[in-house]
Image (cartoon, rainbow, N blue to C red; front, side, top):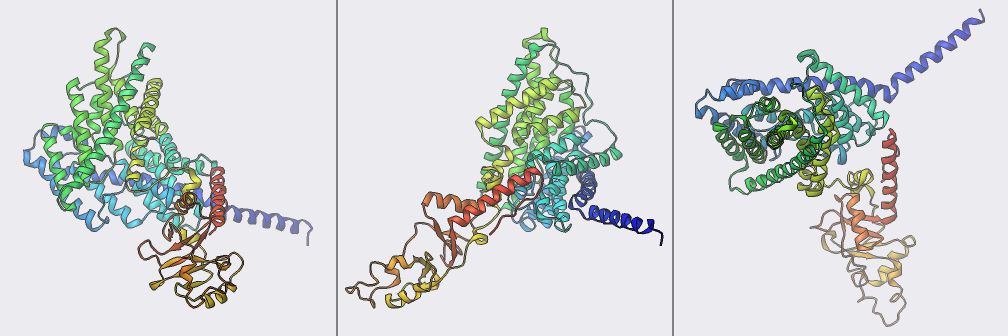
Length: 604
């Protein structure tokens, strides 16, 4: 045999092994998935837009671009009927298919990413998308982006669960879906990337950054293949003529911050008021649809997404009184639509309200200082960015979205200044973004950093230990001494009453004063008389973060775990050392995720 042949075989064998390892590598699989999820996000955005437009056409005989003119041609009942009738359908869907709640949005993505390892229920996500498309088509004053993001995230989560990848990649997979959907919705690939990293994933590690970028690019390519490479709004050439406008732009940021705080307060207050109405929940979307339809009889601009009217404000084609009126009425229509149970998001409405606010501010500023050559359209742009970034709590992403929507980076100073000031003001006045407040109102807490978020995703049941011994409360001292002798040093037995109901714990140390006292009647002394009582216990369903707080406040080094707070049926014990170990693992996992790998999983 020629001596070169064995060496050649070795080279090809090593090369084949490396190719096989590359193909099987999780990062390679993740990149392939990113391409697939990019296409999925693009076509989800296109499909959702097509369905919503079809329903809108069936409802009013027009798509969104000509909706205002079409409404002027309709009889009053043709305006009131679609939102009320489809509202009945939405109410039925909320009751039967969505567990009595409205369709999901961005807040649910944040919750699932943070607390549920990026696992999103498939059925609920699909029904939410249908409900949101029907809501937009009915004329409900909501946006479509949140619904598209939720749909793509749901499908991405389902694909991720069946991909065979490690669990720590699920956040990246969810981020890929979000980035692709947002990029496709707005034709804004950069904004899609930063929104996914800023809001969903929470870090910028290269292992997450690269797949998210790929997905965002693919999603953008899909939408550009169908709609072309054009910004969403084609505007006149606006420039900041003089830096004397800078104080006015900062002042607009303050005004936009106040408007954003008012929008959030109105939305949540309206939700509470509608919840207090004594009507079946499934009827409330129809009632909300009637009210929104009634507003549209005089101001049809408030219906549906509202891109057409936003475009008019950016082109300086609306007068001051109409701008102010639409800002107020759109806030009311959005609050009523969301509060009554229609599906859809809030992002597009915030752009609408911000454009009206900024346009009105620009007209007033121009009349006060005519020599500055102020363009109200420029202020409408800044108002869009400032109001939206303050409400959704993602200023970087919002600034990029506005830039890519407009295709003009010459207004950088104004947009960034307004967004920064408004976001800071809302943080001081309100403390949270709209999405975080939504979750807080449901009892979902996300503060405390990634480590605590990991602890919130795990329950006490995962970390507790089984009882060393379970002793009846009526056990006599004679038998009790024998039972406790079998326990390891320092171990405690659980003392229970009827129905295995917890009384407390007991250990050998608790017997030191009575075990050898000749005056003690061992037949009269029972375990319940020597039991260590606890001011609080831990339900099995409590999170490890809650357990950490309870232990810190109680000062106990270990606490009994019960199946639920009502029955107090014994389940086990949770030791402070085990809890600290879990917290340490969570810190290591959070650090590893930030570096771009899964790290050490949380140990029970």
